Image (cartoon, rainbow, N blue to C red):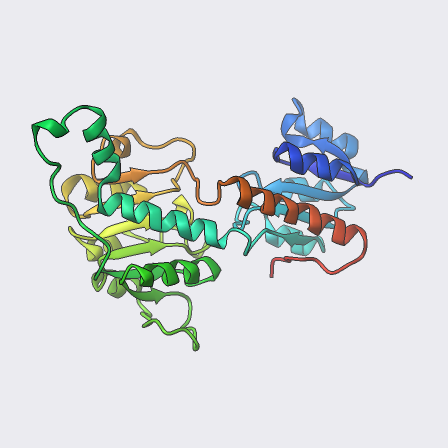
Length: 313
């Protein structure tokens, strides 16, 4: 029996690709020298798309696939998928939530500890042989500080639980107050930043959240304030953040995401009050395997006419 045709927009892990190839004929869009020619050649037969959070699936691709039924995306963020175009075409969109919650929350706390205790600097201090010349300067700690979480979703809740273990106070801001959550709610982000020592950004990337962490929000966080971005670079006014970090208007930043990945501004690399990570939030063997399996499982569920595991609302 002929296997249904699938367009792979961006590369996926070898193990995930091997699983997909068991059930589908795969066309590698990302590897095509002439992508328009590939769409023209196979577009009429493609019913399935597999992609990742960075490559997404544009309206142009969706419109070139008249029989498309589902876009299965690797990652919790799906801002690179044109969901409105998919909706107009009657195409299902799925992502991979939940399986990465713990990993991203763990990474968030790790970056916060690294920033507060200056772990990159202490590591260099020992490696460079400077310890015999004197003790490393005193650092900060998380205990007793107030953390404001921007986006108390699945991952945000896991971060909040972990921060409480470190004896931090947790408050949050989002589109609306969540009735059954124990943390104080701020309806105004700037007011929350003004009242916090840390601002943890974990909201989805979208048109609505573009630049939501503005200069005024970071100025409210202040010279002693620490910014942590685990969401998308688009949520933060990056030039304003750099200026404030340079001038002392913002105390520090722990960043896993950037505005133009993988290109990180040299100004950020030169700063000593930041910790930088190359978008590693969910990048562990265990979590990435689980995410990949969910991509496959959503495709297979649709192929069999079964309910999707994680449809995007």
